[in-house]
Image (tube, rainbow, N blue to C red; front, side):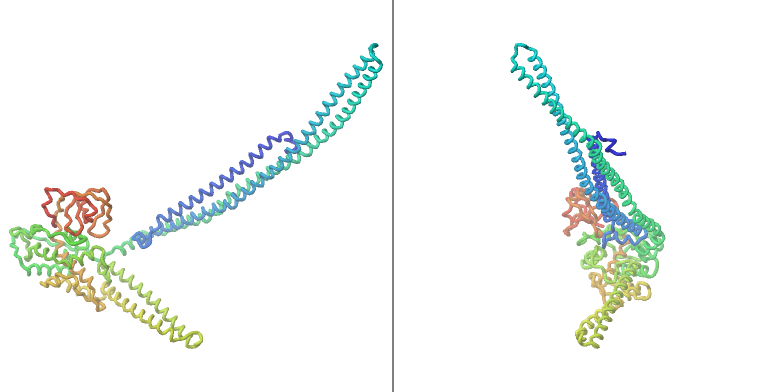
Length: 615
């Protein structure tokens, strides 16, 4: 089966066929190239997807990834990143082993094809030239034969005519002989050219064309084989990454199998456990026995003293502090700047002169004590710094007991690591000093004394710091009874009429290491005062709206007491700006807070404008 013998007369069709083969190869190259682009794009999108859902460093989201379910999700993201890398490998290998190789081969194939068909056209032109020569000699031979025949007829005519002279007859005879000779020469030339043409034609159809077509056939078969090899390579490159992709998928499955719901539940307990005891039973208050309330400092102080004892002595209503919903007093106390004016004396039933009285011991009207509390500006400032993201106390006393214990334990571990690091550095310096003492030429031992003293000083500071935090940790864990005693002393501050203690947030509190921490004293004062009034305002109704406002800008309320608003949002105004730059607004019955006055446009209701907002 040879193109040279079977397709000897299909030169043009073979030319079209081979060009179609090259076009097919180029089309396959384009297909592979687009596949590599898709693989790169897919890998890039996978990487971006994995990066998008990676937890941000130093964020609350990162804390969630200590749970096994979140760890499994994180492992999935990492495995998908590796998965994307395998698609990049596919793209790189296909580009280098298929696209680039076939591109070079196509160029070589085009040159080879061009050379073969050039030789074929050259052979065609040669045989066509021989054919033209044969045709020319044939026509000349035919013409000469006709001319010789006419000259012979003319001579015979002249020879038969008696009126023609002998000279004319002789001339006609010579002309006839000359034409006959020319015909013979043309015949000989035609015969020679014919033999030559037959020889060339035989060579053309049996030697040149078969050879050329055979080379073209081999070229085309090599092209077909090359395409087959490329298709196989295409599949092999995909198959090579399948084991690694399988490992990535196995990693995802392994991560899924590592999810432990019980462990996650335990971690949630450790993360959010406050350490407080559940609230006790609420005492029954009998209002059926009318009692006349009198203004008495002793009654208020006794009441407070009773509450303080209940707070620290056993289960009581004071223990509802961490669990009950903060009342309007807390919202007022956490105002971003100076507090709004105090509420009217009628805010509480206890302030009504002839109203129903509690069977408990007599109290001073809450409005008097509340005014006294609200006019204590340094105290409110300190409370606000604690509640609105101020400086965190060094002993983490602003946290619930369990969370505080965890923070202290973490701090102790960090300090121990730093101490160990400094001790290792001290040991290294000591060894170097010993080397210098044994080999003075290596260095001066005295040059290390300053560094050694500095490291020892750092160790001592870290140890003192660690002892301080360990003492606080022991106090939290119950190993030291100082906590409850000091707490009683703190609560007792407010049972006596001591103006400096009431008007100041800077009461000293002795810490376990003998130092005094201002922040803890501030927190204790505020807690006791807020707890005293907490149960008085639990049943207070929500404040009336005095107008509406439209948010001019978006505000993110990240601190307690503030509320987030979106630009264009309409809300209710429940308290005007009192000069501190903050306006109190409400979105719904349970969602209210402060926003910067400059962020909203306020429309006050004329009818309600005179009604001041109190809690």
